[in-house]
Each structure stands twice: as structure tokens, then as C-alpha cells.
Picture 1 (cartoon, rainbow, N blue to C red):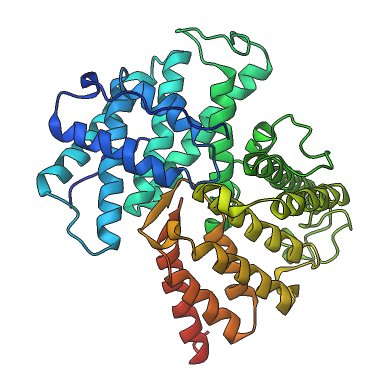
Picture 2: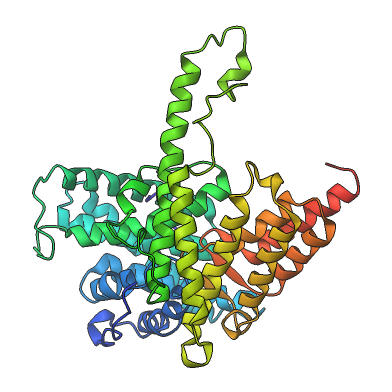
Length: 432
């Protein structure tokens, strides 16, 4: 998580913490801190992970924990540069950039200094900084470094959650100790890293911490109700529980498949080390019948929620989140009809793109570049372009990606459009 410095070359959020002088005595640092409060958090509200991590932990800690203060200021600098770069403006005074890089290096050094003798309270600081470091690296486009922080953070988090499950030295829920770490903090971090982990899987085709899906699945009856969801937050929580249960199920299935392969006579069939020619029927990538039933139930409740949603009487963020969830619904609905991505039907691609276009037409997408800690829109749009054989669908997807500037974790709409366009051109010229 801490290898190397950077060089120059759904709880409703509460009120902003007061901008007090103890955040920093450096005017430029205060400027970066203020940018996070007033601009960066506005972007982060469009992410899948709950915004209350930033309001409940990151910002309050930044006022009295040196490492977090430095990390938050570094985040402000990275976000300001990201915004300026995409609209082709100068990223700001060179001196301000120096300050931002200095803040990041100082945050790294502060975390390093407490790691060897870290208390449980220090672990809370380390994990908070880890989430911020991931954001900073993603904003700079240093995805390898971001994934390194993610691996270290999830490893530490799982070890702490294992310790909690053994009931060793953890305070009761709702209590707080200066020497300890609260269970709710671990749960909130697990929610954020779990969703980001699924994005990373789509990027490197490898689950870094599949067990995190078990820890991050909240105990809720939202999966089993029948009435319309009462809010988009409730619909999101329920959908992401289904998604995390699927990821957890997949991790277990793949482990069982590895054991099954190891029990076969692979000497005469070396290909079995990669993919068994006839795997048992219960070893598949698709959701189990139980999970499919959960999704269908969720989908009915979400349809009822959308039916009664009056967009003229709700906030722009609620509309954005509802339309984003509608894209996920279309993706899953099409996916459940097929055994592999290539089995998608033309009408399924059309529905995904239609809903994505309805989302992207919102002012929140077209007004300025947006950075979200995680998300599903950009990864969802890769599916029609990669798996469809229809050139019109593929180019329509690329044009849609080019029509907005959004980075969701390690997925950037403009970068993905470049990759997909290069793939299309190479294919048309017979190079692949």
C-alpha cells in the first residue's frame, strides 16, 4: 500500500464539518481541503458506495489526524487536476501542484510511521488513508498503484473482520473507544472496497478479495419484500446485496472447480489445468436459481418504485441514481437469459444503451468531468461493444462513451472509448 511517493514529473449525508483553522495553517493546503468539501464530495455522491464514509470518517479525521489531513489535501489537488485536464485548462498554479504532491508524500510517511506499532485506533486511520490513496491514484491514472493500495487495504480489512468475528477486543456495536475500532467503521469500509473490488475484477479479470463479498453483504430483509422500494437508497442496497451474493457464490464455485480439477487425471489432459472439458453442472458462472429468484423479485420492486417516481418532484441526484440502477437492471435482465455474454440478444443491447443514453443526457453528466470512487455504468457499456457482433451497436456504444467525461474508480469513459475504437479499427483492417 505504501510503496513509493508520488513525484511532480446510504444514509443521507449530514452537514459539512465546519471549515476550521486547525485543518491546516497553510493557505494552499486549506484551499485544497476546501476543494474536497465543496467539489470532490459532489462528485463522490454519484458513486455506488455510500457517501457517508467521507462525511462520517474522512473529513472529521482530517481535522485532528495528521495523516488523514495530508491525504485529504492530496485528494483535493488530484481532483482539481483531473477536472482541469479534461476540459483542457491549465491544472492550476505550479506551486499549488507542488503542495498537493507534498501532501501526498507526507500522508504516506505518516502512515508508514505508525504501521509497525499500530493500535486498533491506528488501523482506522490506515484504512481511511488507504481509501483516500486509492482515489488519489485513480485520479492520476496510476491504476497499478491504486490496485496495490486496494490489495493492501482489503488484506488488512479482512484480517480485522476475522478478528471481530472471533469477538476479540472489539467494542459493542454503537460504542466507541479511543483505543478501539468500531464495527460500523469496518462494515462501511467493506461496503466501499467490495464494490470497488468488483470494478477491479472487470479490469484485470481477477478477484483480488472475493471473501470480502461475504463480509459486505448486509443483514437485511430488503431481498425478500414484495412492496415497492421506498427510496432509491433502499433499491441500491438491495440490488448490491444480490450482486455481492453472486460474487461470493462465484468465488466458492470456482474454488470447488479447482478442487474438482485437482481430483481428475490431468496427466493425459493438460488443458484441464485451465478449463475442464466437462465440468459438473453445478459449476457455472451464472447465478444460482436462488439468486435469480432474488433478482427477479428485486426487479419487480424496482419497477414499482420507478412507476411512482415523479422526476419533477425529486432531486437531480435521485434521478441520476435511479437511472443508473435502471442500466444495471437491463444488464442483469439480459445476462440471465444467456449462458455466456455472446448469447445476448439484439434487443438486450438496445435496452442497455437506451437506458444509458437516458442517464447520460442528464446535466450531471454533461456539465463537467466527474470522478466517482466506484461505479457500474462504464463497465456496463463495455459489454455491448465487446460481445455484440453488430457494428452499429459497437459504434453507438463508443459514441456514447465519448459524449461524457466520467471516471469510476479505474474505469474512465474516454480511455475506454479509445481502447474500444482502436479494437474496432484493428478488426476492420484484419489485424485481430
